[in-house]
Structure formats: C-alpha cells, structure tokens
Amino acid sequence: MATETEIKLSLSARTASALAKQAMLSNIERRRQLLINTYYDTHDKRLRRERMVVRHRQKGRQWLLTVKTAPMLTAGLAQRSEWEVHSRPGEFDFSHLDGSVRELLESLRESLQPAFTTHFMRHTWLLEPRAGVRIELALDRGWIEARGQRQTIREIELELLDGTVSDLFAVAAELQASLPLHPAASSKAERAYRLLDDLPLTAVKALPVPTDAAMSSIEAFRLIALSCLNHLQYNEAGVCQSDEPEFVHQARVAIRRLRSAMRLWQSRLPENFVTRFDPLWQEMANKLGETRNWDVFIAETLPALADALPGRVEVERLSSHALRRCANSRKASRSALKSVAYSRLLIDFSAATQALPDDAAGSLAHFVPRCLNKRARRVQERAAAALGTDDDAARHRLRVAFKQLRYAVEFFTPILAGPLLANYHQSASDLQDLLGRLNDLAVASQLAADAPTAGQGQGIADWLAAQTDSLLPEFAKRLNDFQQQPVPWKAG
Image (cartoon, rainbow, N blue to C red; front, side):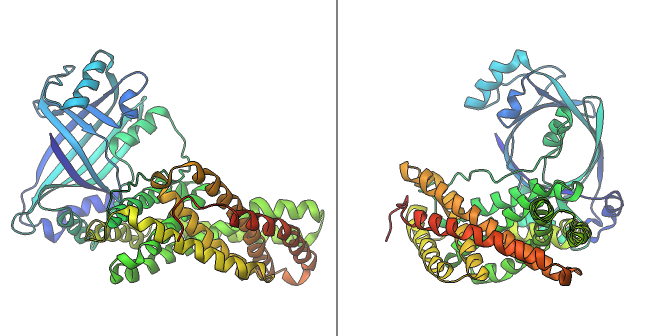
C-alpha cells in the first residue's frame, strides 16, 4: 500500500496555456500522455458510501487497476491510501490489497459495473526544488462523462514523490505567485458522482469533527481548522453560481467557526500565526457579512413590514433599495471568493496549519475544561451587561460570546458526550437563535436608517423598535433558564 499525497488546483483555459512558460518549468522535460479511466461502483453506489474508488486506467498500451480510499480534500490537499497493479479491462484482482479493504471489494466483485469515465490529456513535469524533494506536476485537460453528459476537466495535480507536505505547499505557493490557481474543492470522482446523479447545488452545513481526548491540543486544532476550510469550500460554488442565501450563510458560518477556533487556541498558537491570519479571515467574513445582512432583511424583515404597514410607499421604496443593495453586495461576495487573494489565503493558511508544531502541554482532555470554563465565564459577564441595559451593542457582544461557547462545545462533542450535553447545547442554541433575531432587528434598524428614504420612515423605525421590545421578556427568561443549566464538563 502506498500513500498518495497531492494538491489539486483548478485553473482557467488561458492559465493552462500559460503554464508551460513558467520559469520553474524551464529546462525540464515535459511528457504527454492520454489517460482514459473507467470508474466502477455497485448499483446502489456502495463504494461511494464507503469513500472508495475502483478504476481501470488505459495508459497507452497498459491497463492499470487502481483502488483508492477517498481523501478529505482540504484547500486542494488530498492524502489517501492507494493500490495499483497491472490488469486488463473488466478484471478485478484484489489479492494485493490489505485487510478490510480487500474483504469488502472481494464481496462486491460480482456487483461492480461501470459508473462513469474520465478522458484527459496529461502533461507532466518532474520538479526537484531542492535535494531530496521530488514533486510531479501534472496538467490535466479533458472531460468527465457520466449519464451521457460531459463536464470539463482542467486542473493541476502536484504529487509528492519525495519530501514533505511543506515542500508540496511551497511549490503550490510559488505557482500561485505568478498564476491564478484555486485549490480544488472536489476530486474528479466526486464531481463525476454529482454529474451522474444530476444533483443541484446544495448548501452544506458544518459536519461533526472527530476530536479525541487523547489528541494533543494542536492536533485537534489542525483537524478543526481544516474541517472549517472544507465547510467553506463546499459552499464556494453556491455563493458564486446561485442566489440562494443559504450558501452565503454557510460560508460565513464556516469562517466564524474558524476564527472562533483560532481564539480558543490563541494561547497555544504561534503569535505570528494569529496576527497574520485572523485579520485576513475577518476581512473575508466582512465581505460575506453585508450580503447576509441584506438577505435576512429581504427574506424576513421586509415581508413582515409589508404586512404590518400595507400600502405604505416608504416600505415599497425601502424594498427597492434593499434589492439593489443586495444584488451589488452579492456581486462583491462572489468577487471575493473568485479573487486571487482568497485562493492564496487558502493555500497559505493550510500550509501554516499543517506546519504547526505539536505542543507538549498534554492531551486535549486537559485543555477542554479550562477552555470551556473561560468561554462560559465570558458569557456570564456579558449576560449581566446585556440584562442591565437596553443596549443593542451589549446584546451583540453576548451573542458573539454565545457563538464562541457553542462552537467550542460542538468542537468537543465527542469528548463531552453524556446526558448533560444535549440539554446544554439545545439551551445554548435556543438562546443564540433568539439573540440572532434581536441582532437581525438591530441590523434592520440600521439598514433602514441608512436608506435614502430614511427621513420618511418613522413608521418603519417604530415598528422595528416595537418588535425588539416584544422579544426582550423572552430573552430574559431564556437567559435565566440557560444560566441554570449544569455544564457538561468539569466546571472550575
């Protein structure tokens, strides 16, 4: 069994044509080969569920049978187990495989059938940036064919043959310095399955993170941070290609979770790591945040205003203004996710995260209680301030503290699992949702006040203020209920 480690980067047709002219490829022999691949699965797509790939590859006169475990693709980096042997079309010899992988495929042998194909021309260069490092750069151009439909393949694969993951990221960063290259969010097989199933773009929520008490704290941070990047990248295409608000919402949540993780681990992260990356992620979140504010305003506030103030011209004017601002803001969000700066941030942050030195401060189990106690104390402090005054800013600060506490609880769910966790998490989520509604009203009041028709909108301002006042008693009750909840970790 071999371990395949590679970075996948997508690129435009113009950039693909310019690749061979790059200085780093000068005086390096280029090889060219047509690759035709047939991927197999069962009728019920068992291999897809098991996150495995079985394919036959035609490579000139050779045929190769390849088995791969599906990778977690993060900012283009894929690491997976790979087996490959010479074969013939339609033959499946799994005798070279290991343990459970072999048992599974042997049991499915008679059920395997062609699922889709890929057909592309591969240009390769062997890079040796320093002694002991060898990296194959492959440019693939062709197509995926599934269900009688085709989708373009145009990507770079940087495969690590000898060296470290840091060497691989260094080459990717060097290429990005002169070419607009974006870390791929999906493998060829993943894209092919979506084409095969004719699936529409769907917003993706954060997946559970399999933290373990025996992990070092930095190992856990690395796992959580990269899962946040996955969450963000799974929603990239939806932000750029769809007007569905949930894509922007989930992309923004991914960045918030990432920044919350950086704050949780701040005392154990190198200072330059935090000071370098946190402002960059905050800037990206802000570019998505304005779009999210207008989406919520249009979807939730405007319909309620129209019902409460029927036929009012100021509501109609505000609606027209909001639609224009939202459209412009969405263009800005799309530009942000299509920017060279964002593509480079994904690679730079992933490289720095992978390179973080493991700490010697003990296991994650020792880190969790102190971390959560700190977050819980901050909530208590801000709760007192939010209850003591009718201050939107104080409630917003409490909401931020609740999000950080809730995300931390979610990050550590495998460690905290027990009878107290579900009730505590639900109570925190309910209160955060209510604080979110209060924040939406505060943001709506500001958006309405800044609109060109603000001078004619006293009725709108009064209605928004009344909605806020109506939620405050429920807010006080839910906050009190939450404060009575026992914590699902050792308090101190």
